[in-house]
Picture 1 (cartoon, rainbow, N blue to C red):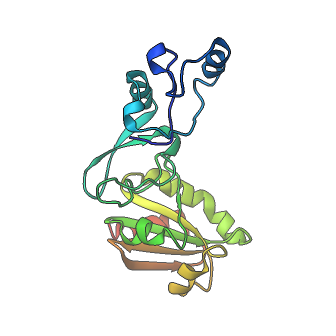
Picture 2 (cartoon, rainbow, N blue to C red; picture 1 turned 180 degrees about the vertical axis):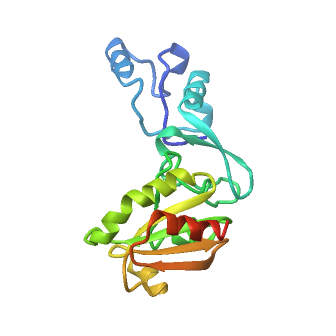
Picture 3 (cartoon, rainbow, N blue to C red; picture 1 turned 30 degrees about the horizontal axis):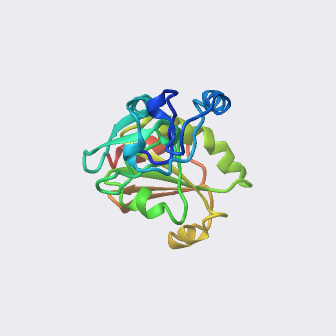
Length: 202
């Protein structure tokens, strides 16, 4: 159950524990009906309408690692959520089929613990070939959604991971399978070349 999102239902039985709402405050709550606010009370404070609203504002996603079903708020579905049971990334790509941005901190969870195939694009904003490759990476993320995770790592902002894999030239594309590095491509590559390498490890 999400703890940071609540929509107040304007009924007497649903008023906050602080007391009765006067007409002015009731009007204010009405205007803020669909705004996210901090939820500080216990879960028992949720009314039926609160729970119904949360159900409408959430989606159920099955974890790719353990199969557990997770209820994810729609406004958080693109933030690479972790499974509540196994604590691994719920899916191999973002819901909108875009590349996942990984960092030094998230690389282990997003790449090394992923049981499938992961393509990681090591890039930097100032790199012209990287910018030329960007549309191809976007296309691959969309075409392989649900089968292969496509990730991007900014080497300027995440030097530890770049150093770990001896990234001295960019763009560099690394393919991991079940947490093991299985392919390295240095320099700009065509979409077909990348697809061939991905297919070899699926």
